[in-house]
Length: 449
Image (cartoon, rainbow, N blue to C red):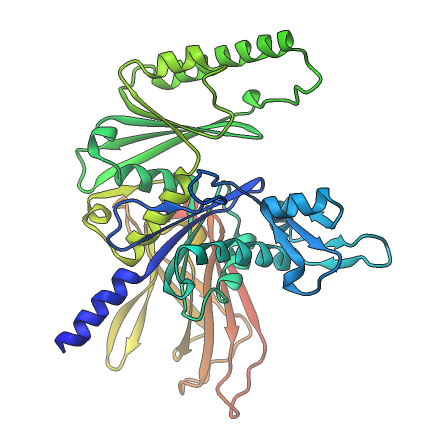
């Protein structure tokens, strides 16, 4: 018994959780073990901080199968040297679920699905981890994206079934979630008061302002996000040095105005700057203002590390999970369940739990209909308002009353505003074949939140 327990503890310590920040321009991967103080981020060059993996593929002309594909910088290099065809915007293709034609000419072109392209990129990106860990040690992967998309998440769930020989849990986290997880895992002096994050991407700057209500138990955390497309940096290749200097001086003034507005009437402990576009060469005045009584950090791998912390909290929960809770608009604000007969007694069966991210809220199970052709749901808002009942009638289904009517209930969400319910008649073996009937209902959340 003691030996088994010791082996179990050793196995836990060796298991790895992975944070995969998937972006349309570039992606990053961080990883950590159970007792590791801080995640490590995969670098494309050992010993250097080259964390950005360009999210693109190149299919080489002279090779077949999965081996034909290169990713990241290798893909760029091969395409520039004329060795293959470059495929960009992989995340955008996946969001739109479109196929693309890949080939050197019309005769060799092949139509390839977005999911296949995404699978190749994710698998090859994760294979870079083999230089650091054994892939079979992966306990969980948390994918993070700037904008959560149900179609892409479905693809990633399918892709993740083929990660290593062991089954790895798959989670999804918004950038806000990653920011929250990263901050609460830092020394507390860094987040005594509010915390600011500026993420500089090709489409401008997105700001995240984290605040906490320390009077609640657990501590309630909130994030205000805003996008500043006016901070987008255009192509300045044809500009002379004087014109470039004038542009960046104006950009510094615009950034300073944003920072002043975010800091107005707030006590900010720390500021985080993400992205290579931030530079001391141009944002001098903005940096001076940020550094007045605040700690300022610059880097670009916060989201992948935050996803890593979040994955570890799911697999190996710490006291932080119970002490701090991030309340976002993405969270389900009601418990949804149903009352079922179990023998001679009635029991409550939970279906979707309050506090779950809408993009992770799903459940599928079978029930037997005995009394009538209706499904009754209990909706209990977490704000203390009265529990209400929703009744779904399965029109056209005849209930036999002898426990031979089996239906499958599938609950899922396509956006934060409603729960989708799909009910399928599954019949009862050879005696009562399925009619093939499917009923779909939409349960608007504004009614229950």
